[in-house]
Image 1 (cartoon, one colour):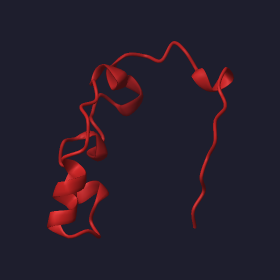
Image 2 (cartoon, one colour):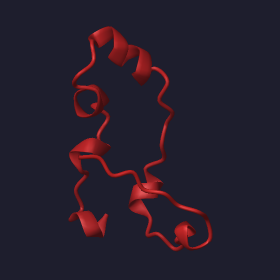
Image 3 (cartoon, one colour):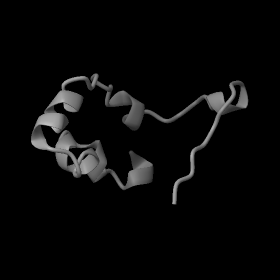
Image 4 (cartoon, helix red, strand yellow):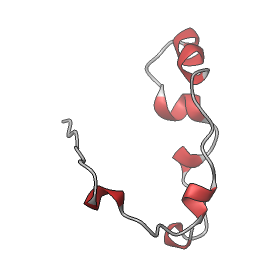
Length: 64
């Protein structure tokens, strides 16, 4: 968290509906949100000690 100034970014908070699915109906949002899995806070709080992209194939998708 030091890199973030000790504050959670808005997209890290549990208010998922308005952050990621604004163009969907409430019913469609509920269907997608119900499929989300928990994500540990430690992945944000602990420093990264391993960079997996050096050992595994990575891809990026750029959209305009």
